[in-house]
Image (cartoon, rainbow, N blue to C red):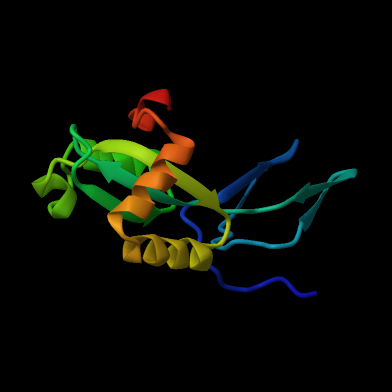
Length: 141
């Protein structure tokens, strides 16, 4: 198996050894362990990226928004502070009532599209399975 030569990640990986700091800009999602040899030992690291499908609503739960992101806390912050103009800021959607997590961006996008096609009743049932009181889940993190 050969390692990829070019990928995409949001941040560099920093590995410290006794003598020096090694910075590896590994901009991708690895499905296999990467072994990096250092003085006297091997470090085995698995790189994964998390993706979230989430649902927001307003104070009275009348409007629902379905979205996908790779950083849920950052994205919720953007919604709550209306940093991005659009549907969620127009309708004041900032209450996180549902989310699910995956390591595959394609399945996250497919799931978002699937949920968006559902009727409102089915979306409500999905929220109520995870969050029966329709609490703001973002207050917990």
